Image 1 (cartoon, rainbow, N blue to C red):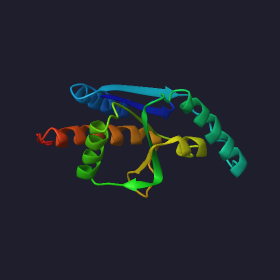
Image 2 (image 1 turned 60 degrees about the vertical axis):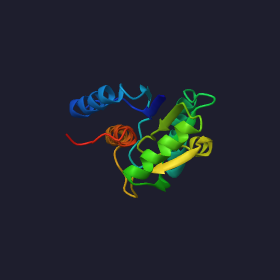
Image 3 (image 1 turned 180 degrees about the vertical axis):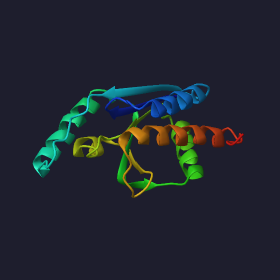
Length: 159
């Protein structure tokens, strides 16, 4: 299985990079993981709604360049479907059983995802009605993907 995580911006904080590296290493026995970082747009203070939409559109265009034909696209969106870890694991297993050998998870920037990316998504997933920093969301997503693989392999998650 191939899994891509596509997200704007670079991770600057060492503790987040360390966590991402750790989960990437753990996931290597279950899938081929590829993290794709696209350039993010800086949001000016007191940005207008029009400016916000322009920023999301620009980031969306950069993300769209990395979406592969035939990949199953999962957009992280606050209005997406919320699942517990077991149901998320079952969903990933079901997708794989039905031929989704390449999944692409899309994380939006600080303003969220563009309408074009949301429209392109095969499924919208929400981790919470709360908003999380998009850098931290990478760690949360990787942890949940790893947990899903462990659940599906009938292996204990906690050591």
